[in-house]
Amino acid sequence: MAETTITDMTTRSVRAAYFVSDSTGITAETLGNALLANFPGMVFVKHTVPFVDSVDAATTVAEQIAQDAANGLEPLVFTTAKNPAVRTVLTAVPATHIDLLSGHLSELAEALGTPPSEQLGQFHTLGDATEYFARMRAVEYAIEHDDGQSSRALDLADVIIVAPSRCGKTPTTMYLALQYGLLVANYPLTDDDFPTDELPPLIRKYTSRCFGLTTTALRLSQVRHERRPDSRYSSLAQCTTELRRAERLYARNGIPFLNSSTKSVEEMSAVILHALGLRRSPRRKSSS
Image (cartoon, rainbow, N blue to C red; front, side, top):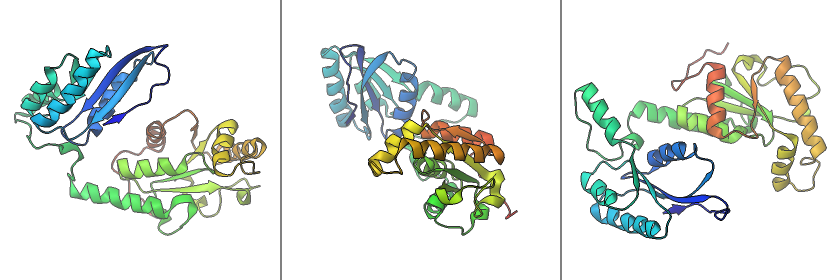
């Protein structure tokens, strides 16, 4: 049972929040957190409880929820459990219950004229094998092409993320590969790539597929300091220089870019998809 650390309970209202699922908990946690994000003035003690697929498991969770209720944390319970017996146990506890599936499933079943499957964890199972293996291939491609390590099959890339070191290239690359099945490479801009008005030779002919990342000099210096403390690499002056050069390079070559310092990987990925006109199904390109 995962729990967040609360650092400022004394200054803001505190509530317990449970994400309860009969499968992995990913859907309950994602949807629940999306709703809670709209209340930044609150502090939530969060618990993600996966695989609640029996009355016994539900009873254990219900006891914890009841304890939090007794302690004045007024629990919020976000559920994606399908089993009616499990839901009955959970809803008997004094808490605010948000069933993330039931109403929507009923509406969808009525619209489609067929009842929903009773199999658990449908969303995060293997599902469509073709789509699954495409995502696995995309992850392998991302690993091979991380940090400009390989030029093999670079012409197949859907996206090439370009940025100075430690601006968020790798996590964004991996997210796009795993979540969307896109073939994504990334290339680090180093001192060897300047001075020039053009992109580095390895990626120059794929300008239309490039997307740039930048950040603030202070943030970059802090991140690099964790890797190489008190080095030229992590100095504020070096970070400032590299970011200015990168942004000028993006502008000269018409490469869209964004500042990663205040954006999550999910947000950056959404911007990249929109800017390059990509969707979940990757566009296969010729080697033009």
